[in-house]
Length: 100
Image (tube, rainbow, N blue to C red; front, side):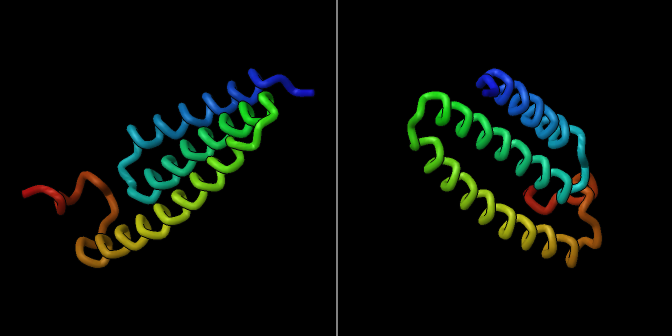
C-alpha cells in the first residue's frame, strides 16, 4: 500500500509546477493549462485524504471540482478565441483589454 505522504508529495510538486507556469508564462493557453494542473493537484490531495480516512466525501468534492474545471476550460477557451480574433495575439503582455 502506498502511503498518503507519497500522494501528497506528488500533489505538491504538480501544484508547484502549475504555479510556476502561471507566474512565468505569457501565453494565455499555457496559463489555463497550468491552472488545470493546479486543480488536478488539489484533486489528487482530496482523493488521497479521502482514501486514507475511508470516507467518500473527498470523491464528491473531486467531481464538483472536475465540473468547475470543465466549465472554466470551456469559458476560458472561448474568451481566448475572442481575444485572438480581436487582437491577433494571445500573449498576455501585448494587450490591455481589461484596463480602463
